[in-house]
Length: 69
Image (tube, rainbow, N blue to C red; front, side, top):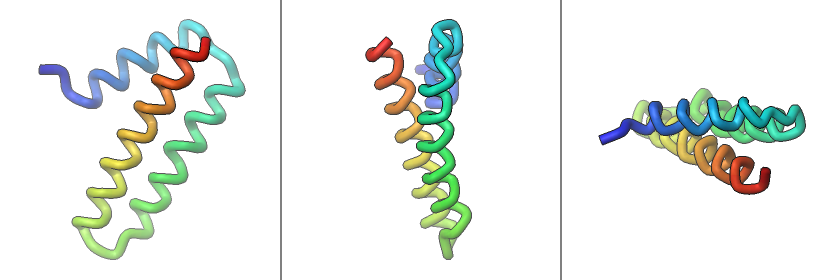
């Protein structure tokens, strides 16, 4: 079974092959917003949940970009 990180890496490498600076900025913004929420989290459980949401949001954003290209 493929891990979430491996899946994201594979998709991101595909995305980089079709590089568009506008989409990179969108991806970075998506991830950074969720990452900031994780940093502000008050408990380890909230932090982990925010990190999980950041990963899912980033992967979804990569999917959106790949299907738009």
